[in-house]
Image (cartoon, rainbow, N blue to C red; front, top):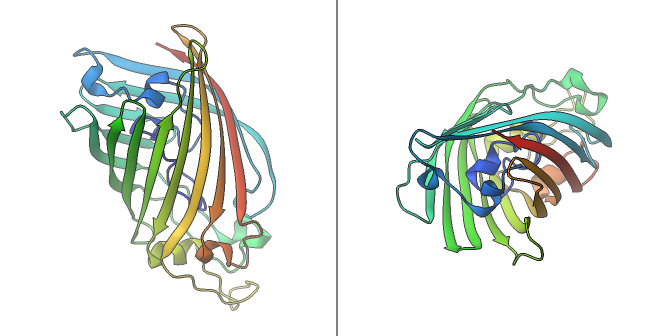
Length: 266
């Protein structure tokens, strides 16, 4: 998980959180809401593949080209899920239409020496973050999602609240999902991510306060090519909150991210 990223998770289901650092979730179950409650005892779902991802801004605010990333996602019938992107958790709910459970997410480190634009910023330790997720289905095609995480590096909190709506199917094996969400962060998290010190080489002193980190809207298209092969593409537009956007090293308040991935289900 990128410590610079203005949002912690996209506003999809906990299964989609497994690939939050890499791009799309490739499983149709992830976009339609399948959970461990619907899996036979002793079974598992596993997807492997690769995704091409890109963004209009990288960690230091510069443009970033496309990157090919490996994808791995596994969920067991006991509710445990894990991914190669460093996210793990467990579904604890036994109630249809309700999802909740703990989350553990790995975080990348960041140093002022990583880029000239990052001079004067805080050094970030690559420590695991802990928290939980919650989801509530408004109906068969819409749900509210939320997560709250303790940032063990910044010793603060960050969270996300989102709404996901799956559109009526326009063609067989195709699923289109719209999403919108807001990400919040405490002052400690904002300070670690976006504060700048002129004495340490930054352009000017800057200390953000806690509040809205970003708002985002996205569209996700999932195509089940067969019972085994899945193609997923997604585009998300993000607008940074005032705290991140006013930081001296942030050059773009509006960011577009995209991804397209192919996965195989075992």
